[in-house]
Length: 161
View 1 (cartoon, rainbow, N blue to C red):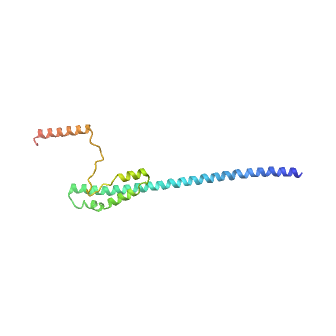
View 2 (cartoon, one colour; view 1 turned 90 degrees about the vertical axis):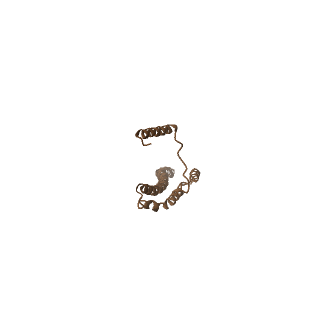
View 3 (cartoon, rainbow, N blue to C red; view 1 turned 120 degrees about the vertical axis):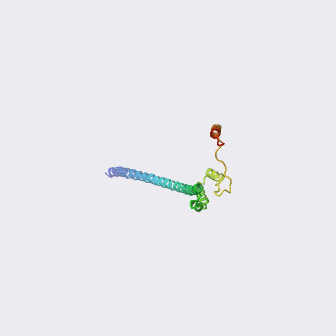
């Protein structure tokens, strides 16, 4: 009788272990997956915040440059010194904003090489600007010549030349 009881107890214990260990293993797997997903989302959130900081710094540089350009254009149109005040006020802040923007760039070797080869242009004209655009294509040159010839013909016909 004790042999039957011990076999029944062993079978019951085996069924009991199977019934409890499988859900516990599933729960542990779920916890591991949930932790991995939370880590992934936190990592993605930090990249989104980093990207937003870079975009905000770029927009700040653009806004300051736009203030300078607008003030100078307005001055050339009106020759009024009051229009030039935004340009004068934001001119010293532009190099600082460009420096902040450059410091936010990623520190991968490729981005560092790009950042170190491109130098910011000075606004006060102390550095001569370099042409980033290629030379005009032959078709553009032909159109410009045609336009100049046409303008010359019109001016000789009207007698202003």
